[in-house]
Image (tube, rainbow, N blue to C red; front, side):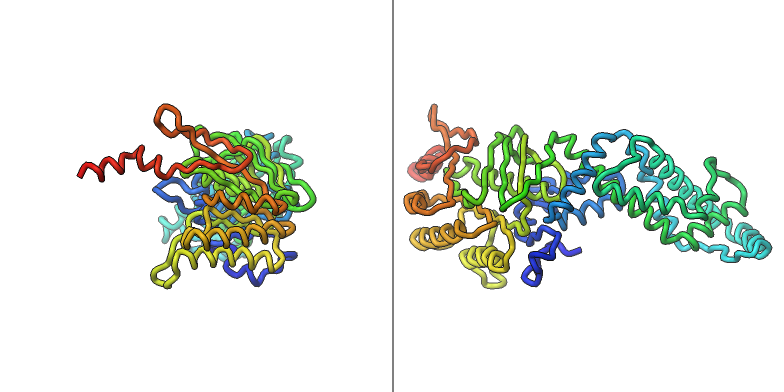
Length: 458
């Protein structure tokens, strides 16, 4: 599956897609599948699956989060059901059993194909007599497949799992139908061993008549495994399941943090059609970029249908999510830093022009040009962003002079982070405040790091 769900997004009809479209830059910024500085990616953080197949399903879900409220709610309902009955799901077949059945299903082994009892008996005798090693592998594979089917029978027979909800409902229903196939009635509750005829008959069922059924049962196990992992992350991290609300695009959060930040300071988010743009100011290291990442990561997790790191999170789902937090130039392609910034803004503008509901985050854009150009470009873009219905934006900047011009533009809210300079050292409380920061700490940081002392003492 491609690493970006939006490489061909310009060909997607906004009304047709159920997927939240993400491009490669956003996946990189949010560290969805690869992390900077040898840390864990968000996928690795969420990957509490027990099976390799479950990990693949989880990755597929994380590559294609939902944008439709009904699909998000179906996953939320499944996760809530798992959390309410977590111990019952311990009955899902183990990673060992599923891996052995997977291996057996794909291993190249001889097979007795005859159906006639006499011819089958001759074939079974010849296989055991002439291919003892293969016979042992066949027996173990058939026994493990029987164990898998019996484990699924016991799982689904639990009274507390009788009425699954959300994504679990069709999975359980399909699994029940597959397990009820007539040939599976041959599987006893107590496994037989040492009976050549019976074991090879079961092998015939599993690898000829019901091969596709076994493959589908494995896939359903993996899908449930992925949902269990999402539920376990939600519970283990103390995440809250978001409220999906109706109306125009909006996001409201309380106690929002980033899942990778230890002892994170919680903050709030309030973006709606009366306040479509958050203009964020403050000195470096004060928390602007972390706040942007925390918001985008929580919104992404919310579209997956799992819990988010907040005390409350309510949102109207969007269709496109853009971030511009770690741009770089491209020497090989001859793309300068400012052109990379311009192309990023163009990608957002194109999505808006195509009719998508867009959430976009830009961290100190237009750094690649002079201050006058950056001011003019920022003001022009912010004014246009603020005018776009069903779109939301976060825009951090050191150009605090913009605030004087933004006061005449509607739908723009100003917040800031600041530093405390007590006792001769800079301290940060990472608390979001209303208004615009007037702090200028560039010289202060250089002095604190002793840069001028080093140069003056030469």
